[in-house]
Image: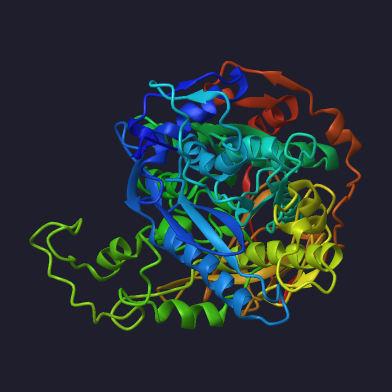
Amino acid sequence: MVCEGKRSASCPCFFLLTAKFYWILTMMQRTHSQEYAHSIRVDGDIILGGLFPVHAKGERGVPCGELKKEKGIHRLEAMLYAIDQINKDPDLLSNITLGVRILDTCSRDTYALEQSLTFVQALIEKDASDVKCANGDPPIFTKPDKISGVIGAAASSVSIMVANILRLFKIPQISYASTAPELSDNTRYDFFSRVVPPDSYQAQAMVDIVTALGWNYVSTLASEGNYGESGVEAFTQISREIGGVCIAQSQKIPREPRPGEFEKIIKRLLETPNARAVIMFANEDDIRRILEAAKKLNQSGHFLWIGSDSWGSKIAPVYQQEEIAEGAVTILPKRASIDGFDRYFRSRTLANNRRNVWFAEFWEENFGCKLGSHGKRNSHVKKCTGLERIARDSSYEQEGKVQFVIDAVYSMAYALHNMHKDLCPGYIGLCPRMSAVDGKELLGYIRAVNFNGSAGTPVTFNENGDAPGRYDIFQYQITNKSAEYKIIGHWTNQLHLKMYIQTTTLTVSMSLSASVSLGMLYMPKVYIIIFHPEQNVQKRKRSFKAVVTAATVQSKLIQKGNDRPNGEVKSELCESLETNTSSTKTTYISYSNHSI
């Protein structure tokens, strides 16, 4: 908005609007003058918004911190790549160009909310009759982009915050990474969809893994927030419904952990020493610090980690603490590396990628150099030549959510394409009925899409906007001093878990009190969990709604609160498992190609 030829930020206007929109307009004034400097804008007939964590959270009151090269830059470039591909495709949205407005969430929900108000400006500022400048003249508005749909966000907490605003203005939203079960509530987040499955599916998969491996006594660990707490809640609920799995204790990692907090959590977990299996729904940084604390307390080999998709197959959480993470079983939505994106991203340079306002910062970070006198790095760093090349002069590996970003953009494109076929039959370009895309109508087309995604797997949504659950199961293994994640199974409504053992004899140390055992195979070194020696047989596959006959166990799961930190709760059965300390036995068992 401009008054007397100046930007709205300098115009002392008086807003005589309803209370409902006063706060929104106030926040818009705060961010309007800098919106173009902190966003990527590409013109088009239809504009899509994008929300990406280009930077980490800032500290001490600063909203944005360090650049996130993979989660930020790779993902937003995936959106730009998808837009380029769609605009070149003569069979998809022919004669209609997609444009973008991409914003940085800085990995913070409140900051993302402020930024996302840019997406609703066109819907709020249409009527200026109630806005007057101090001298009585009507204001002059800079015409904002009309955003038809939004791609994002990444973190569930950010998507929840943004979804509450977008639904008021009927703007559909498709996330590429938010997995909190809460977002499946179609009564509260009716304009939200996602191309990744909700955590309720992976919670079921993790319960299936635990029961298939024969564990009946575990602890849970969650990062404070929607992702961690909802994931653990879903795991706990499902484990109670099927019976046979007892939660020894539930620990929560605070949003702002104090010094020594992670060591305290490890010590609490050690209070129930027979519950060696730890189910983790935690963010990447919290996982790394938990492993560091366990290593510091010399607990290598004690804990059996089961990690959610936030751990997946990432290197960062296990870097320089491979031994403490060895044997961890992790889960990750089934995905593939997109070769076309690799070719695109490796070809990006300072000269051909000026549309990305954060690319110069990425260039400095990626190549460890400084761009001119205004670069962000200190003066002792070498100067960039501009001739550096991604993957040739720096390491490069495609970020894991690139596939889902591309699928989210294509979902929006196919929905718009089908909408155009129905509303503008035979019309070249946008017809009058689509000059202003109706968000509620577009939502219906989004929920109805069905196409093969970038990895060749079907992209569909259910009535709640959720994608189907398809996961790979990994184990972090060390062989000949080389550590790597190996796929040991998959889950698609039921578990298919395979462990290939290369030798015929292994030693199993069994704690009978918890009916949990840890097998240690030395060449190669692989962890195997066995419920009882006599039950060393192939188990039947478990369906998504599997019901285990364990009524006697279920009846004993009477919860009672205890004065324990972080809301730790024990059941009567859990206490009996912990106090029943039987002797440890050693058994020798032969395996070959054991499949569950």
